[in-house]
Amino acid sequence: MSAEDDSIAVLYVNDEPELLDLLATGLERNAERITVSTAESVAEGLAHRREHAVDCIVSDYSMPEATGIDFLETVREHDPELPFVMFAETGSERVASEAISAGVTDYVIEQAIGNQHELLARKIATYVDRRRAERRAERTNRRLRELADVSDDVLWMFSADWSELLFINGAHELLFGQPVDELYADPDSFLERVHPDDTPRVRAAMARAAGGDSQSVEYRVRQSASVEVWVESHCEPVVEDGEVLRMTGFTRDITDRKVHERELATTNEQLEQFTSTVAHDLRNPIAIADGHLELAREAFDSPHLDASARAVERMDELIDDLLTLARTGTAVGDAEPVEFAEVIRAAEHNVATADATLTVDRTCRIECDATRLKEAVENLLRNAVEHNEAAVAISAGILPDGGGFYVEDDGEGIRPANRDDVFDDGYTTVQKGTGFGLSIVSRIVDAHGWAIEVTGGPDGGARFEVTSVDCCDTPRAPATAGD
Image 1 (cartoon, rainbow, N blue to C red):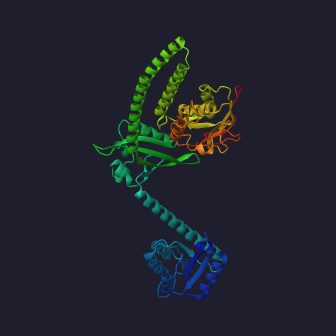
Image 2 (cartoon, helix red, strand yellow; image 1 turned 180 degrees about the horizontal axis):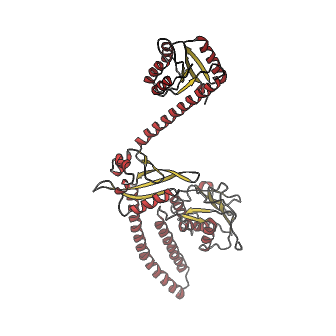
Image 3 (tube, rainbow, N blue to C red; image 1 turned 90 degrees about the horizontal axis):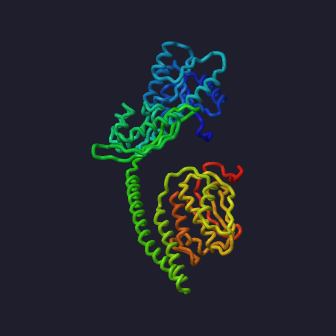
């Protein structure tokens, strides 16, 4: 806050000029923030207030024509909250009672001996700062309510035990089909709109939140006898010193998302049935062709038969990769924390690495679908082995900032001109490749909400970096077999 914003403009009204000058000088000397303007009558004080901004009024009681009480009552008609201190020469219960009834902020008896300027300056600063803080809070609350009123989400706040509704915006009535006043009267009444099959889950989430745990729960709401929607509620308990003070959160309509999920599940099921049928229908003739070729090679020695056998083997590889790509889709299963080094080692067992070596630099637990991540790593390892004629050294680990992981090799690398194409379906630079391995990797990475980039490794090979991955703990060296 600047010195100008922190300044306090005081108006002091007294019909005795000497007292005016004395108090004004004393207040300004005891508080640099305070600037005092003076008036010798109530009429002059009212005129000053109309023309100038005033943060606090200090007034004598006994003045000709109009008293300090008259002044206070007039001020209160226009500003009920303006700090007003009655600085009276003598104490009187009647005057004090009238002042309190009229809304005085403080009643101070002027002492004949002793410097009261420091005390009065401190009182003035306290009352003005309090009023400014209240006004800032009022402005903030007003803006928050304005934002809440235009939000499509239901914003709410309950007491710690859910027994009292502290705040809710108008979106509740649209989403739950229930008047807000009804919910204020009975904070549990929204549960009557929840589908009976989902009510136990909602109550359980509320109980866990009351224990201090953040919660997220999806459930159905019956807006009316014929309309049912899916909603998602997020609750964040407000906890101080280990005690839950209140519940804050929001509820939003996720019906469209649920419909999309059902459609996606149906599509994936149909795709699975289709790919299984295709696999069966394709593999049968390939198996027959392979069997006859084997018999023919026993009876005849011809390079044409060898070429045909390689073609059949190639077709079998293509079918495997195409089926994997079709089944990959864009969805992932339930995520759980998985040790990165364990995923790398599990993938190594499923890949024919020949003379290649594999080391893991750093590891941490990653929130992911472990099966899908292992599938992606298998394809990265297979890519390093199959795209290099000589044996390569492969390394994997967590990125320095903990925001992802890498897999790299010291082989021939990928030319910069080709790096934008390697994740395309069917792209390959070797005769025996199908061009679907890295495409599968890309889809799995995208399904997790991550990002992947290929660069050059420090030893000239290919380096794949997967980013936007959060480690669940501090990256560390992987455990050895003896640990």
